[in-house]
Length: 235
Image 1 (cartoon, rainbow, N blue to C red):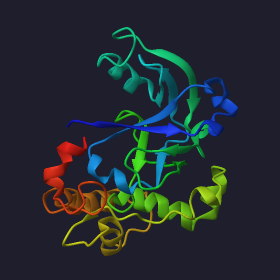
Image 2 (cartoon, one colour; image 1 turned 90 degrees about the vertical axis):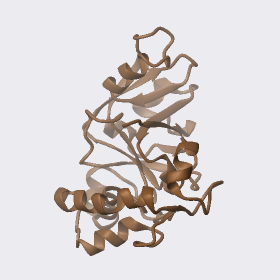
Image 3 (cartoon, rainbow, N blue to C red; image 1 turned 90 degrees about the horizontal axis):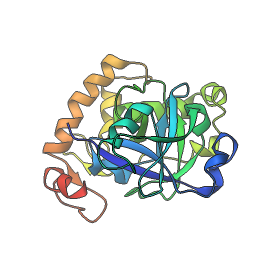
Image 4 (tube, rainbow, N blue to C red; image 1 turned 30 degrees about the vertical axis):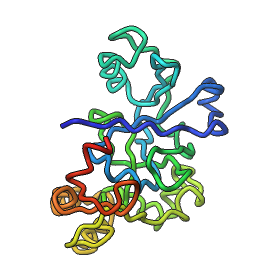
């Protein structure tokens, strides 16, 4: 499986508190995705609140926020000044990143926020996850949980304006499911929360392959073209 790295630039005014040491630098939350064709539909990004993250300086001076393991992997892919050597400027928990506003490539929304997701695996990808609730059942249920549960927002000091205004952004049409497959399949399977892992796996099983084989792009320069044709181009 080949991941595409998504560099989501943090708006400078968010480099305060624990991130203040990064002020004046170009800072990106770095997420890995297997589905770059869905990036048009991003409504937020996710971090694990108690996950361990770091800010790492790359060869070009950019700073990328991700977990240590992902940074080490990048150091062997010609992204750091010295091969195999990481420059860690700062370490932080995921909670320090919550509420960061970012601009994500391809996303039709100019400004989306970093929010908590409890099911992120830190041994997979970068620990930072892009969120496309139109096409990802996990993302749809995690966003729905935050919207429906004020106590959950309060627990992580999540402001309403980071969550409540954001609706699904349809980006891929699948004949069987319409313009936004995740809400449809979650309703079909009667999924009530992001913690229903078995049902969410089934939801992904039903939609992900169809998104590739039958999907038609709804947004971007490849609008109207089949996903299976444009996926390599979007990468």
